[in-house]
Length: 357
Image (cartoon, rainbow, N blue to C red):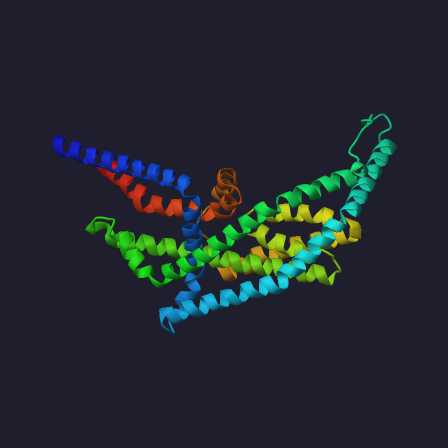
């Protein structure tokens, strides 16, 4: 009996050691082939994102036709974005750069007004003699900034070409993933012992549903949020409505802190058009974010990923600290994945150990 227990213990230790070694090899490969890893990761997220739509279409047609329809729709959306949205965004960006002196003047006026108000209400308060002076931003500084930007045009072009190649390769690979999802799932379950393969199939289906629903729902909700903010602020006469809409769409995908950062960015952008415009833009952004939270998310994304608010908060900040913006966006589904793995593997093992006499 003691020999059997010792043998079982050593087998578990061997499995754990093997897992650690495989994890170390995976991290080493990720550090040495970042572009290849990026292509596969992006392709996986594209496949997860469109999989719920493909699954619905697949009820009425064959899988190849469903995949073709979905990616044709994506191609149309990308074309519209490049032909219509990008030129308008570039135009507003140029206008934003041209209005930098106006932003500087507005900021300097606010500082002067704040200084006067403090001196009037607190006569004994001694303010520093040299404060922040936006007026010191002159032609020399601007020309230096422009020269530096022009010098980096070559690097920007190379990075853009690399990004386009990665995006194209990821799209092609995501199509392969979708067309061969059954074979990929079976290859995954084959890694487990025969008695565990049914559990592995359930795990793969649950993870696919989790990430698919979260990614596709988040993209749809973020796009609607950004589009509504852009349209409503444009109706109000805001000069940089499209830029703020794009920023809001991206920021909404970052839970908890995303829209707060977007609203802070929008304040100086709306400052040259007066205090009323600042207030209206903030009201529109805050109001649309709440509509998305309480109306769009329940209807489009369905049930929650099953992570408590405290865990969600920790996952967002920890993901952001470890992996930057991607970590902020994917922190919550990653926490949900850890919870699923715990339920399938760690919890049963701990229960078995506690019940062992």
